[in-house]
Image: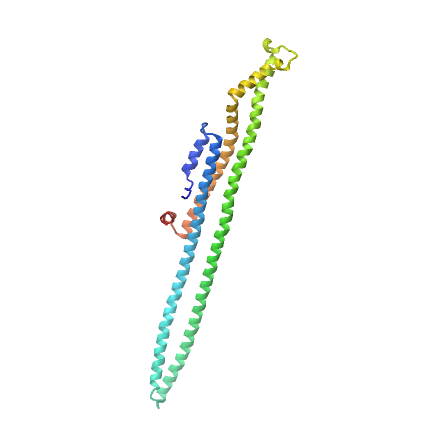
Length: 288
């Protein structure tokens, strides 16, 4: 089953997901990757539409030229037929011998010369038409070959581009995960450290007594660290992860929005240039 194309509604739904704190970053990355896969269908549609439209234009132009020359060939055949009739008529006049009347003989000679001249013209015209037909056949074949090559050249980077994007998403997610670990560690350790320093500096009696035991000197730090790890660590990690991820994902979403806009512009351009309906093209593909 083909992957459905990307739509504006899909982008809007994803924007809402980015604003929803209940959506995990992992889920957001997976969904964005899915959106780009949907957009690959849009790009494939554009490529197919451009190819079929260009092919139809080539075939239409070729058929029009062939029709033109077919009419000329039909006209030549008609003229050759008339010439054959003139030859037969001239031969019949000489069937009973050379006429004695010089005027009649001059007319017969003039007719024969005219027949030869017209036959030469028709032969030249036929040669020219055959050459023209051969030329448009060659040009059409070369145009088809060029179109196929363009399609093949487009397919290779097209597939590679989306494979590279999938890899980029995976690497970005890994990179953000590493950053989250680092920033979370700083926050989880930093908050108890600040608390410990604050109460130590302010000189609260219960927290400012010094002993030779480092654990008892900083037991507030240890208690705060344990409490944060138990009750706040996951929230801190999720908050940092979301802050870093959403910024990155919003940037990719905006790029995807621009790509979708350009895709639609190109589709409209093909429709205008080749005078073919995208809706009809899609319907034919669905019915096929």
